[in-house]
Amino acid sequence: MNSKAKIAVVTGATSGIGFGVAKRLGKDGYTVILNGIEDDKGAQKVKELTEAGITAEYYGFDVTNEEAVTSNINAIGEKFGKIDVLVNNAGGLGGRSRFEEMTTEFYRSVMALNLDSTFFASRAAIPFLKKGENASIINYTSNAGWTAGGPGAGIYGTSKAAVHAITRALAKDLAEYGIRVNAVSPGTIDTPFHEQIKSTKPEVFASWKNNILLGRLGQPEDVASVVSFLASTDAAFLTAETIQIGGGQALGI
Image 1: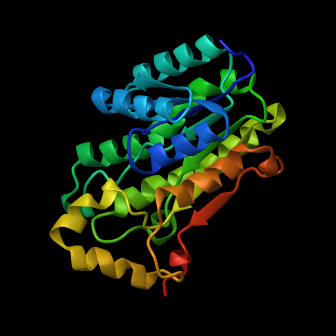
Image 2 (image 1 turned 180 degrees about the vertical axis):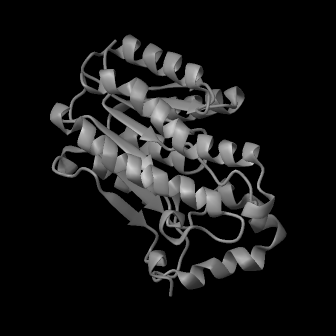
């Protein structure tokens, strides 16, 4: 085991933005630990990265399960002796529901997917980040954290606003150890996340670019390059920040 290798843990990394980020960090020289819940896909993505000359491993666990997150992050940290970067990429809309009809189960599931997962993974990783080099945590919020989301996405917006707050709170808490904590806020990125609307209402999906100043949808690489920067020494004086990656979409043209 190369003890000098930089270690990056990326949750929800078997597709979409997460895999794009894992691939970029791998090209940056990190040993990349991919997390997901589809083991076959995890094995396939590790093979893909390995063939590209990237050292990668897969750990299958549900980021909303406290015990699973803690035990797996501990196993990763103990195996490598440290964690240099934790990317809390896992998350999602979780479905849509207006508040009047919203079940407590739905409310808790969306909060768990976006907020609990960030808390569980960060808490477990901190002892190993303390042993890392230029260590940092990178979280994912959303424009919905400011706009409160569209119809039925109110609790998603609420959960992402909480991720924005916990990013700043973690940054305050961990500054004394030299651990930086930042967030990215991706706009509309062309990934499987939008597969349903792409297949059922392609004209609606295509129209989304009209609300983006730069006139195109984002690609996973657009997010990956910013995550790469935040993880690097180029961002050594950056903490408690959230970077919008939406081509100007947040301005709401």
